[in-house]
Length: 255
Image (cartoon, rainbow, N blue to C red; front, side):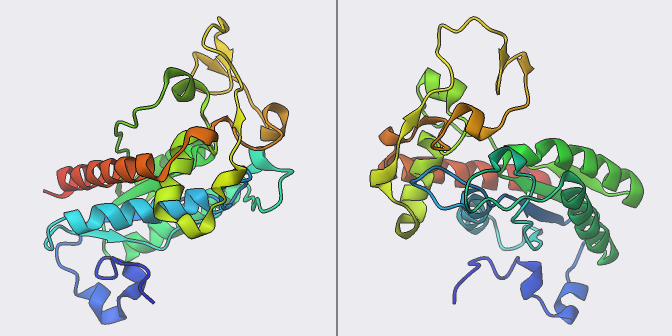
């Protein structure tokens, strides 16, 4: 078995003495990945969000210098996915459960002697819980905490940028490129939940005002965007950009 490829940075792969011997823990950065297990349309596995966190780390960590003090805690793979209720394969944690998992991880990381924690979140439904919990954790434990953002260019059409919010061109392309044995490209579909000439300021995402929504209310397939134009070629390009962007952000944090 080769997972994860970054065993020299994966804390569960360390023996007790190895964790105790890590130098300069106060300046080291520990990453806590948070994802989700939920439907991603007919073409993608339900573990997309959990898998993407690991894919990004696989691509970014080899770009760091051996002496860069970056470590990875056990991932929180299932999380707040209640907006996808009604589809087979969705595994939902209550917001309070997600909060408690993050707090527990942060408290133990602090007990091990580390003072910096960054959450690598790959599921939008988690973000409000993650941010509020990190503030709480920072105050309680005196930790430096952050959400690890690493924007990169994905060359998407304008409509996809605005309304491609789930199981879309970008996610499908990334998975086609990195986990081809887990996908069914022929099953991809398209569902637009809005148009470019829509003047409303109230929309499900990326608008001055948003509203609570459930996927089944806007898409019977679970896709929001155009997954039919996704390709592995695009995915390889975007995955490389993502890995480079994340590596650069990590270097900025520890050097």
